[in-house]
Every structure is written in C-alpha cells, then in structure tokens.
Length: 296
Picture 1 (cartoon, helix red, strand yellow):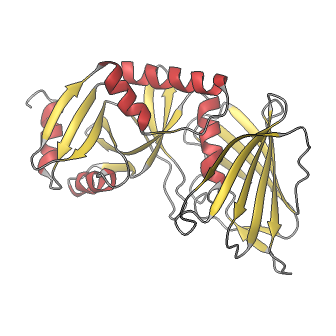
Picture 2 (cartoon, rainbow, N blue to C red; picture 1 turned 90 degrees about the vertical axis):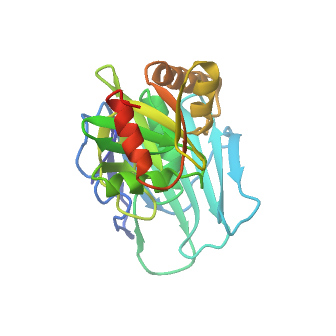
Picture 3 (cartoon, rainbow, N blue to C red; picture 1 turned 180 degrees about the vertical axis):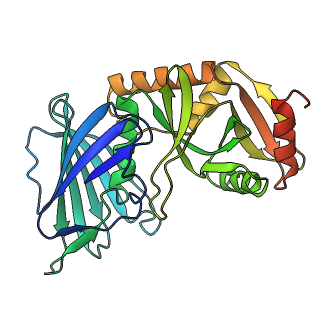
C-alpha cells in the first residue's frame, strides 16, 4: 500500500492481524506532486524494544486528559534514530504506539500494543496522533512546515487564513465556500515550495476524509475578531513572528529548529502578510477580492 503526503511517499506493509481501514488516508493513495522522499513503513502487533541508548528529547501531555486522551514522547539515540512513543490514558483498542524512525535508511517501524483481544486490529495508517506527529517531521525534512490555517483557492489566487483555535479559520473558510471558492483545508496546511513558489497543501485530517489539494499562496491573513472588517498590510519581524507563532512545531534539535526558522522566514519574506479583523459575513470575501485587484 502506498500513501502520498506532499513530497513524501510511504510504502506500507501490515503484519498479520492488522487490517487497513482508511479514513484520514482515504484520498492520499495517489500523488498530488512528485514525491522526492520514499519511506518504507512496516506496521506490527506487539511491543517495541527501545534500546537504553535512546533518551527523552521532547514530550507532550494535556492537563485535562479528556481533551487529549494520550501523552507522547520523542526519544533519540544517534542523530538519525528517533522513536515516537504514544500512550493512551483510556485505551479501547490500543494501549501504546511506538514508531522507530531511521532517517538515514528512510524506514519507519510502527508497533501497536493492544488491549487483550483475539480480534484483528482495524486502523488507518495515519491514525491520530501518530499521523499528526509524523507530518511535522516530514514537512521539516522536505523543506516546508505545518501551519494552523485554513486556505482557499479563488480566481487563480491562493489565500491563507491563520489564527489560534476559535478565532475564525473555519468560519472564514465557510464564507469563501459560500461565495464559490475551493477549500484547500479548514485547519492545517502544509507549506511547501514548488519551483520557487510557496504552495499550500491540504493534509490528512483525523476525523474526516480530506481531499489532497494545493494552491500557490498569494497572500496570508492573520485573523482576529472585530466589529468591522479591517485589512492592514504588515511586515517585518513582528509580522513574521505572528506567522511563526501559529506554526506546528515539535522540534527537539537545534538543526530542526534552525531549518524551520529558515523555511518560515523565506515564506514570510516572499508572501504579503495582512492583519485581518473581520466579522462573520461574506463582506470580508468581497473586501479581500477587492484587495486582489487593487480596489481596497
């Protein structure tokens, strides 16, 4: 089975007892762009043996386990050897996931520790949060980054709307859909450079089947709620840091962090950035369209 995530191809093999049941991965079985990295990925039932040479590099856990019913760790041995370890607080099918990643050999071995059962394990290869954690690394290693943002393609223009959760990314996306634009994604975008031009790519979403889509990025709007529509061009380090604050970044090394910084700076230096206060009606769509043709 092959999956295609931006410029990354995953060739996946499943151990006996594991049955692929596609949701997040359903539409990512053909390439959207030519893959430049090819990972072999093997899924096994059982407990991974993580060598004592691995040390903790980074971890994440919510204060409220009902909001995030798992905790994750990133461990490392040699520079090219990583392990992602995910433990579920109230497991229904899976107690633990361990992914052993060899960045030199481009190989990923994923082990599933199950709750006691004799039934087959039906899973999507990009089940949450494994898929989300892997995407951060794939984007970074291929010259891009992930951004909390919605994106649309409209009249040969590509617009990104970035903000913290609850500020209006999905609302903005719906308003554009109502006016005939094509939705790229309503929450998480992969920014990737193709032939010198930054593009926004959709990403597999955990809870619904997202189509793989892309658009060249014309402008990025940093959203905030406001009583009236207000669109103001911004630039410089403050504008760039506002974009960076909405990036998805689980980096454990100086090299990865520097690469991420360089990718984001290149994007923000070559893409017009706007502060965008808006109220939730389609007038904001008209205002941005007017901006595109110089009437705002």
